[in-house]
Image (cartoon, rainbow, N blue to C red):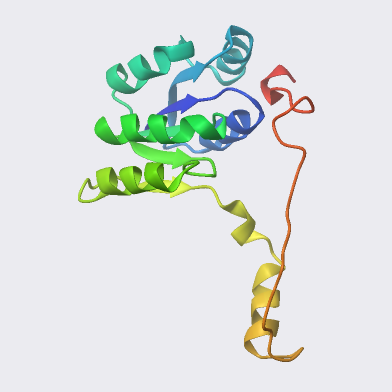
Length: 167
């Protein structure tokens, strides 16, 4: 599979590590708003093409990609996803898919009958203790639950995050 990635920061670099380990993937292009992150990730992962800023559009339109990872700030996910859909590229998009219900409806409308794969990385579903919790709830081991309030958070892509590609 010919792979492109948009967003060369910390999360994007994690995607690149996964693709690099897969012998069925060829990293062909990366797009980033900053040259520094794009160059470091391209060098580290031997990615031949680098696109900067709004050039991500050219990457999606010209690179004949099989899949693109979208690892950009949340407000950009919908527009990039729609462009990938319009170019018949399978998509792995970081969460959230969109920042409004209107955007989500548009994405779903464009995906319908398109025949491409769209996946959002809700990786927390694979945490090892979650099946145990599900079993405890299903078997009412602690009684019948009426409400569960779960919080997960992190520092986010603010001042604390830097591109892993710099390591």
